[in-house]
Image (cartoon, helix red, strand yellow):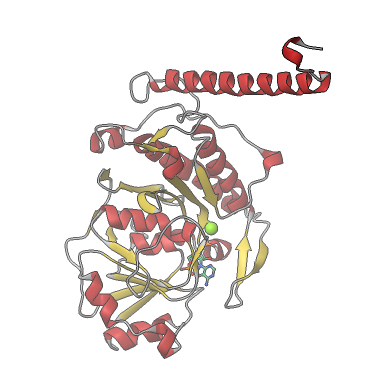
Length: 359
Ligand SMILES: Nc1ncnc2c1ncn2[C@@H]1O[C@H](COP(=O)(O)O)[C@@H](OP(=O)(O)O)[C@H]1O
Ligand SMILES: [Mg+2]
């Protein structure tokens, strides 16, 4: 009999002790991880030790650091994309069919780029949600440490760290945009992309062209290394559209803007956003608008949406709704992307796709 008449069961005491030890372990390991992360963050920008940039208990992340890692991830992924293409051994497969019945393709370029990009970002920012187009093989992990260097061009544009709660962040990775065109060896259309959304709003985007080694990046209310062109043709725009998932986009474009309108079929959502900007790459065509009418996934469009938004442009559904980059992977309402134009006036001009049967 224990003092005060309470009988202690040996099993109960053992369970209680184990629980106590568990709580102590949890608190202690969180504390240590936090110290480790703070140690890494303590130095000059770019001068700290390699390791995770976000504290393991969530905490905050610096969007400027996320931009640096996103650029690095897009470039490293791009190296894989180029290496596989140059080897000519693509191991092309179909992941299934799109709703319209086209093959949803995947190659070794997609898989190897995904592995590099995902693990670079995940190792640097272990506490953020990362959504990527390709399956991540947990049995084939790669620990790639970020060297904590923020490139000069980013430091020049974005003078101070931009802290946000880690739990508000969703990262979207497209390790190889324009896979269809990649399999056809149409290299200019291919990009790797990273996007960071905060509370579902796209805030930073990176689009990298591995075959021309060109990278565009921008942060909303931060800075960019790319800009809009000086003028755009709003009356009879040149419209860039999908060449492999087009649906009824040509009919919609001609019906809205007239038969004088030039339609430019092109691969890749990243490529089509870059067509709206002032991009020095010689292989890049130029357009005034980007329209898409079929279903599309958020990793295909988030980076372009962030860059356009940072430069004062817009990417919305065809009915003018903003796209939220949390939750489901796909969007149903088509896409309209413009810059230096009256976007809402363009939305009003477009036909209602549900009514006209152009979806
Ligand atoms: N109807 C659809 N269903 C699924 N994915 C689509 C789609 N339309 C476009 N996409 C995807 O969006 C990207 C750009 O498409 P497009 O080149 O036709 O404009 C491609 O991404 P991936 O190459 O990353 O798969 C393509 O697969
Ligand atoms: Mg892809």
